Each structure stands twice: as C-alpha cells, then as structure tokens.
Image: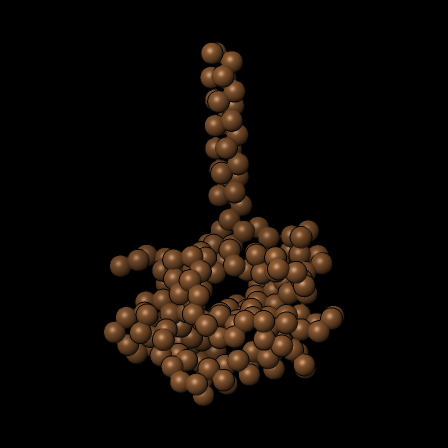
Length: 188
C-alpha cells in the first residue's frame, strides 16, 4: 500500500514539474490594441513595425523541429476598428460577399506561389476560444505552403499568415498553438 502511495506521489510530482516547465517556457506576445498571444520558446520575434496604425510582427520558429519545416508567421493587427454589434457580426462582415471571399482566396494563392492550390477554401473555423476565417494553400515542391487566418477581438481585426515547407497533415501545429492563445490581455 505504501508502495502505491509513493509511486502515485512520484507521478504527481513529475506531472507538476512538466506543467511548470511548459509554463515557464512560454511568454506573452503583445500584438497591439490590448491583444496578446502566448509564444513558446520555439518562436523568436524577428521584427516589429508600425505603419498607418497597423502593427506588423514577424515570427520565426527556431526549434529543432522547424529546421526542416522553416515555419514562419506574420501578424497584422489592423489600426482601424471594425464596425458591428459584436465580434461575431464583425468577423462575418469581413468576407460577407462572394466577391470579397474570391479576392481573399486569390490573394492567399498569389502570396503562396505560382501554381499554388487551395487545400481549404475560405471558411469559418473555431480555433481555441474564437472563430477564425481560415484558408490553407498547398505550394509546389521547394515552396512554402500557407495558412491564412483572420479574426476580430473586441472590435480589432487580427490577421495571421503562417508559412511552412512541411508537406504532411501535421503542418502548422506550432502556429495553431499561437492562434489558440490569442486573447485580450485584460478582458472587460
């Protein structure tokens, strides 16, 4: 009986140590307008610029896993708030017409590479606690495929463009962790 208690205590201690280590290896990323995300030590901020009220942030994955995938993310926090009664309505208004949807998908393809294809057309998808407009592209060999995501948080539009050389179904795992963590720093 004492043996089982000791084993259970050791297992609980190990789980607690792992959770604390994972917590200590993450840090907040200020996106702008009171919006933050959580970055693991896998990510490094490459640059940060502001232009016309828009905040531009470039991230690079620097973990050993990313040596092959060369995963990067570019974040834009737009400087002009979106009109609407709530974030769901504001998000829906971003691509509320077939024309706006077409041009967003076309821009994603052009941004990816010549002859890129859509793996996932523009659609709303829940990632973490919020909905995002998502597009996923597939590039030819030796080019980076893209994950394009837009959301609205407390009236502010945020766009992520993440690219990777990874070809399998596991691509964008590290980028999705960032998307899941995007939130208001001090929710009202």
